[in-house]
Length: 473
Image 1: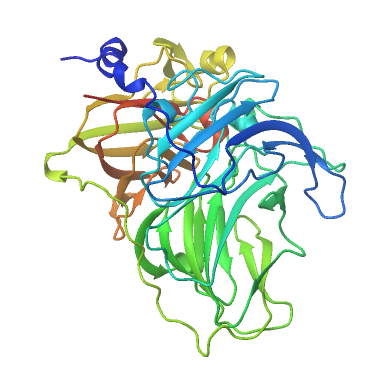
Image 2: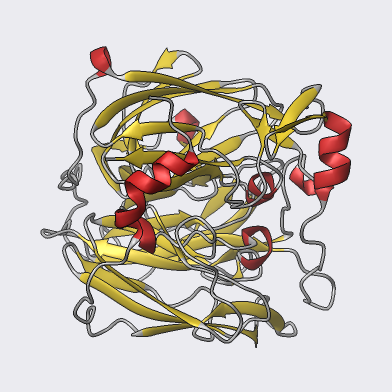
């Protein structure tokens, strides 16, 4: 049967309803998240910056749960524009995914919404709006969501670094240039001040370590467009998880650089085994000309007599292995942006010349030759899948730019990068697609509903690189 949106909504309508009320979440977590405008100091010694945030801080409160807990949060919108909250990486019921016009109505100014679901997966996640994300996220609306394993990894400390950036002028005010088509069609909007947990990185920022201490460092990229390439001077951290999903512990590869694209998370085990030296050890973002974001400095007595060896592996979350030999094959082709827009594409089902797509709609990207408005309900999903269907997808990037592609509601195995088998074959929810490159992924469509699949360079998503895939019973 040829499926369309009407058939899908009829088949999946029952699953869009929220479940019954859940019990309260962990006592240490807030029961309410309030989105508001306030001032916060970003640069040490400088004037405070007007930001948007959750519960009066950027980032918002770290939400910490145990695997199997119930999340029950009342979200209040005190902004002057509609919003939602998306739980990035979480396998949630479709009605709780926080996507306006797809899984819920937007939370209007002065209104509220209750998010309730059982937390299925351990790992490092985050939360942020999915309405006008290209503006609301870089203004400061983001926070970490940590789910502890039933048997957590033994470490001396567990540290969360939520990396992002602001675009500030000389008065420390945010530059009001959100939504420029020039950013939509190129690298995206980059800030000029990198932040760690909401305050400026760089000079004066330190990561204190005691000799032979073992730290779990949870890295989250909450930037709109910046792809971090992190180097840990004098140290060789172990990677133990990507996007909250366990991987066999292994040292950072690629010449000692950790690539972290917008939306991605990586958990590291960092051992204090390099020894003290004057000035400490630089942690550097090697993107472009490179910039130091912090320094590892040693202080205090040794935690133990000698450094620890390779860390143990995390307990993996539950995943159904994909039967590749019988998987349904799908393809997604990405075109557009500066120097790469196709001659013709579709918007709202109508074929248009590229100049008309830009002029009439402000869109610059196509997925399978269709440019999508943000969350518009008139669009057909990119493809339909029956619940339980095994799927293999090849993404082909015919553009000159990188695209971290994020799938809601599911994790996928990364099978190949640029046609070369990926030896790690890790589970992810966000994978970086290189310029003129390709990525092969596979997953089982187990979570019913209509799910966003989009670039997490937020300007690219707003510029047309946003679609949905549909899972029906």
